[in-house]
Length: 79
Image (cartoon, rainbow, N blue to C red):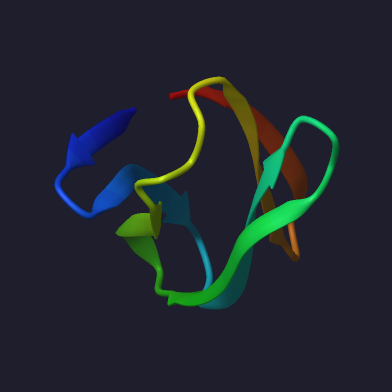
């Protein structure tokens, strides 16, 4: 859920996994342009991840693409 906090738009997620792996996150606009990319190492169990991007993003819809060895998931976000 997006939270406006000063300089950054923060999106927090909790990821549960049964194995240690890398998680590749991409924040895209609706045209598919990549705005932010980051990689996170996640451990067995529950992991909290925060995605930061610049506050000057226009209001509208964005896509958060989450890639892991388990597959790809895309989530639609509204700012």
